[in-house]
Length: 309
Ligand code: NAD
Image (cartoon, rainbow, N blue to C red; front, top):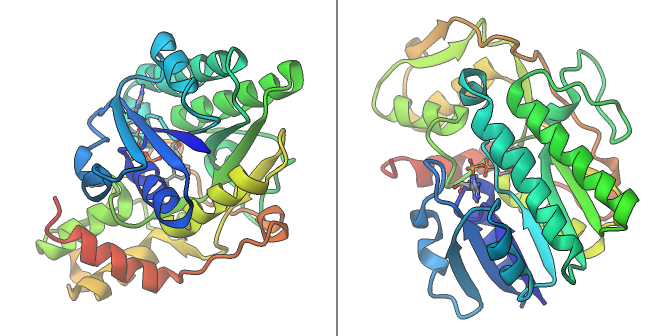
């Protein structure tokens, strides 16, 4: 069995490629356009793996996708513009890759013999929640352009299941952290700055709450969905470990051995959702539970991140 991993030179994708090669005997083709967010460095240790091929290309390139779909039986679509702040500056590349790119993959899959199409999505499609957790049947309420394009891609993918019986599955995970995450994202940014003794900018009063899932746990969840999930279904992936951004900053400072005086509150992000939290009981029913605590995952992340950028 062979899997196409799109966006596999990015953060979660590169961890997933490594996970597939380590934990299964599948062959893997990684497709990535190598935007600012993708890097061959993330794949350094697996580039020469006998079951792995890397192809530089765009998910919107229909003829390339058609060629690659002749070689694989499943696809996991991580390729995306993924940074909320950038989507607030300009939604255009987000619509291009997250919506058009997903649509291109879906149409190409209709013409090919694809057994499993896993669309990687995010908790942000549900919007914010003050109490309780989101389940997969909750209505979508994306509140920033990034989340809106991810919600659009989910709906398109699910519509291809109901309309064309395409074997689509969707995972929606909470915030991930771990090795190989781009330095523009919260945790690597905090680690980099703390290690250099620079101030740690925290939006607003730092009270926004996110649920943090270690990337290895998400990769395991995605593989379980790929292997055992029911087509047409959505699976929330969340560790249940909720933390305010201020709490995250303090834990990072502690892990790096830098003083709390580095924390600096800055003007809040527009439309900054207060809290995201997922009900992951469908994943639990598949036998998944997080294996990494936040502190354990952070230790690995600090070790990898300091000196990387
Ligand atoms: P990332 O930005 O690190 O990686 C995205 C990758 O996609 C990059 O390697 C980039 O080069 C590639 N890419 C971008 N446009 C492309 C195109 N047109 N064609 C081919 N490749 C292209 O993102 P990430 O954090 O690894 O996120 C991966 C997926 O997981 C995204 O779909 C994101 O929405 C989702 N997700 C991320 C998180 C998180 O916390 N990071 C949480 C939930 C869901």
